[in-house]
Amino acid sequence: MSLDKSVIKGFALMDMSTRGGQYVGNWRVLMPEIDEAKCIACGLCATICPEAAIAGKPKVKPKIDMRFCKGCGICANECPQKAIEMKQEAKK
Image (tube, rainbow, N blue to C red; front, side, top):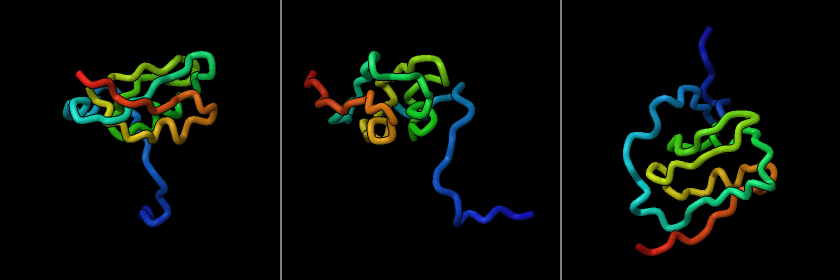
């Protein structure tokens, strides 16, 4: 049986033991901020993060490792509770 790749809509990173490869936080313009009151700990943000910068699983509030976050906003866009807001990165 062969896999028809034309129907694949995305991917899920199942092994979180090795996060993204390189630190990308030094060129980020926007950064995600999680509103703990709105977050229902569904784990979707951790599943869809392309850099594996978000550690979390269902029923556990997510934590973002800013060293790996590139500020793409996918997590904020896909959050069903709109608990993640992209904010301007503070200048250092």
